[in-house]
Length: 502
Image 1 (tube, helix red, strand yellow):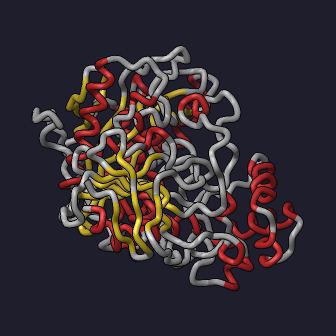
Image 2 (spheres, helix red, strand yellow):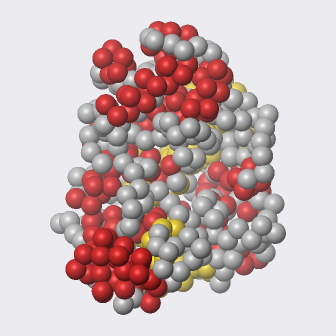
Image 3 (cartoon, one colour):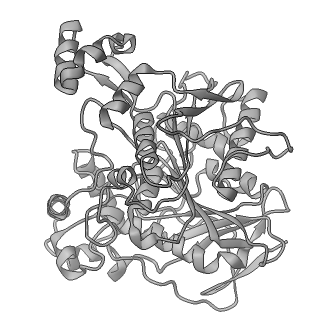
């Protein structure tokens, strides 16, 4: 097995994974520590080392709120260790490979975790790359800076370092991807067959990387899980790029809150102090969470780039869970609904009101619809309208999820399935869940290898057909309690809302 490998900075040694046919390398530096004068700068080259570096454990997680404190669903699900090491020195990546030699050129997955750009880390237990590695995928998980450390924008930064004034977390991801291009062949990977993937903010990150034209050629396909949002009723600006002026005002308020006036003073502050003060400010609504149109990394809205064909056009797999991020029309009665329909849909209001789904009323409002479903499908229809469109494959994750909390298909629960890591979860999953996870991981592996999820599972059985989502064939893949099932878009409300945006 390939237990040692060369990198551009020195040699590394990994350990056998739970399956000894796989080697895991954890905590490989891909950039210099972003501390001191490197705080709020683009990632700098890592230093060389002598001898063999033992890459046996995950590096410290990015500076963020302490995980595992509280009883919310994510603390119960995977943020379970309140003593996990944390440091501003966090630019490391991890690799799982089943290669026996460095010349095997296996397809590569580069994974960006989610967490609203405030939380998350590669050491989360659901991101174990072993099951994908058993399918001949070289898996790489890349850490990046978060919150005020990763996404600060400030006028002083804009003046003093115009080549990289902001978007540091996104630049970390880009640096990790480029490190993979330069080094992954030494781990048995193919630098010309890379898929970038992410979920939630990680999915939004994939969208941002696709919109950055400087990344042309750095990857051949992409996976966006629960990371694209369509807002049929009210504007949702979470993933919309901000102007440097607006984002810079937030940076000025952070400096004021920190009690500093200059960038030099801010770079001398203790990281834990910045963390605690930023957490207070974020809880008051001042959140650093999205890319800024800096004219360098970000020159366009990633969603618009997908729709109009100006992104890096590669095949994409994307979708959502059934119960996450539902949008509603906020109206107190049917008359209020009618008024809102006129506001949103103008001359098509009566057509909207004639839909039975529009009259569905919940405690949150009328006409519930999934924002990630709409966003993903809208993006895919935009690609489908281009010349020689790239295939885009849509999925919806809707199985039963066991547990006393009756959480349903909550945001992020599909990660246990795609990575096939259910055995690490405390939920009482049964055989059907393990069967579904195996199918989902198989589809994902096929897509990473070829850009097409179709083919055979790990046992050699032909998988149910998964057709691309197009304007003329609204095919969906439903991941259900009874396994993967091909379907065609059933919701008339979704069709109406999508046709409205065309």
